[in-house]
Length: 234
Image 1 (spheres, rainbow, N blue to C red):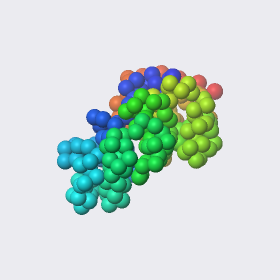
Image 2 (image 1 turned 135 degrees about the vertical axis):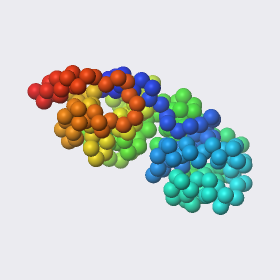
Image 3 (image 1 turned 180 degrees about the vertical axis):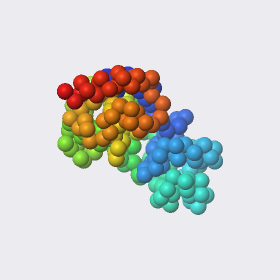
C-alpha cells in the first residue's frame, strides 16, 4: 500500500516551510490545531524578527502573540515557543538537539513533533503520528491502537526503518487529499482493493474524484476507475 501511495504522491514532503532545524521545530509547535498553510503565513514575519533561539527567548510575549495570532490558541503557543527558545539557549547553546530523548524534554514538544524535526531536519528516520496517520492506519487495518506512541511502534514494525519519514509524508498527503475524516473518496483511492474500510466513503469513481483535494499525479480515466471499483466490489 505504501508503494502504491508513494506512486500517487511522488512529491510528498513536509508542508511546513523552514530553513533550519530551529525554524522547523517552532513551526511544528505552531501547527497544533491548525493548518500548515496558516503556519506558513506567519512564520516569515516571525523568523524575520526572531531569527534564532536567543532572539525568540528574549522576545516580548505580546508581540509574538500578535504575529502568530492567525494560528489559533496564540497565547499558549507564544508561551510554548518562547519557553522552548529559552530552554534551547540555556541547555543546548541555542541549537536544536538531534536526539529524541533531548527533544521531548523541551516545552511543547512530544514524540510527534520530535519525529518531524528528526526526520526532516536531521535525516533521522521517524514516524509522525498525526490525526491523518492515525486515522489511515486504523482504516487500513494496520493496527487497532489509538494511542499515538503505540501506533508509532506498530507502524514501525511493519515498515523498513529507512522509509519511516517518507511513509509518514505519504500517509499525511493521502489523508489530506483523499482519505478524509468525514467523506473519504473511496472510489478515487489507489489502495482501495486492499483496504478493509472500502465503502465507508463515496465509492462512485466520478463523485469520489470530485472530493480529492490538492495536486496529485494524473488520475485514471473515469471508465478505468469504474472498472477498478467493480473489481474491488467483486
